[in-house]
Image (cartoon, rainbow, N blue to C red; front, top):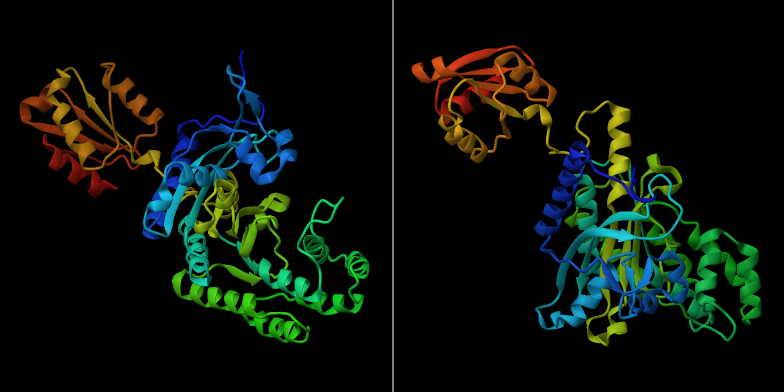
Amino acid sequence: MVQRPRGTRDFPPAAMNRRLALERLLEDAAQRHGFSRVQTPVFERLELFTAKSGPGIVSQLYAFEDKSERPLTLRPELTAPVMRMVAEEGMQMLPRPLRLSYYGQCYRYEESKKGRYREFFQYGVELIGESGPLAEAEVIALAINMLNACGLENWEIRIGHVGILKGALTGLGLSSEIPDGASEPPVASAMRFLDKGDDAGLAELFTNNGIDPEHAAPLRALAELEGGVETLEPARAILSSLTGVSLEALDDLQTTLNAVAGLASTPPSLTVDLTVARGLDYYTGMVFEVQVPELGGEGQVLGGGSYKLLHLFGLPDLDPCCGFGLGFDRVLLALEAQAEASGRDEVVPGEVNPNGLVALIPFGIDPNHVFPIVADLRNFGERVELELRGRKIPKAMKWANSIGCQFTVVVGPRDLESNQAMVKNLQSGEQQAVALNSESILEAIQAMR
């Protein structure tokens, strides 16, 4: 028997109902914030991703050559394809900022484990052509509102700004250029040392670059600040004690956080973390991540910030941009874990409940008599399954139970003569004879719910 490829999954109807409900919630939130949906090809030219992430990424990709020997790859993420689309389709001429949302499958060749698949799904947004604290606040607010709307609990959003530590380090004399023989600039190395708490490595880096290692102490104090918006004042005091360090990035972060408080619903936990370091080669300002404890080591479900990528396509005038990617599969895993722990039947708010299904059973009559009723009930928003095999009543009721119906509507020869239908709630056993028209049947179904 041919099996699905390793690292991929099938989604039967019940799983797909849940996924569709989550996608609808995310898209509804994006549209409420003014974002419009776009879509790009599942495969792209390989150079699109090596231009962004370097040649080392090829080992993680499903890269191949087509029949004309052009190097292509299944897309590993969606930000770069969206940037390529903006450049190629002339979207830079549209009114700014562009607010784009997207959703789709991505592919990475890596070992599969819980929460990580070779084929995975990503939802994301990009705000293109506007920079600054208010643009960043709009993006963060959307992320918060999305996660709250889908019912996720006990999650933490960590917000930082790469410009704060980067500005402090360059102000002390560290270079942001990559020296010969090195893989990253000294500023990036220092930020990673701070993120990991490697004081010895940071002191050695300072010494090697002619900077007094004593300056590492206030930076370590800055990195260890933990809390909400109130941590910005002690951060300001620390930065003010360092010669040549600008407070502009810290002021921008303060403005962003103030705006988020007014634009977004309240998250379960919001932490200011000045050591959040994401893609230091292209992130330029605010950065943020969302963690969910139930997922353990794979707990990050969302990440993003302000970045520069459009210059790779010759469009520097639209940089910087701001956006985030949401791990659709991880969010769903977290929702399932939380629903199981709390005993909830509904995992995603608004997911289709199969118990709401109505089976319309024409018994011993020409089914053409009930077709208009089936159509009307569906138009009224009911999920109706028409019995197609002409089963006798006992077998038809057994079939209705087997597919999870909550209601049956039976119309037989005598019902036609008396212009009636029998509506039954299979869960409670309640049944009622009603007039044979869609309005009366709908009213009976709603009354029995």
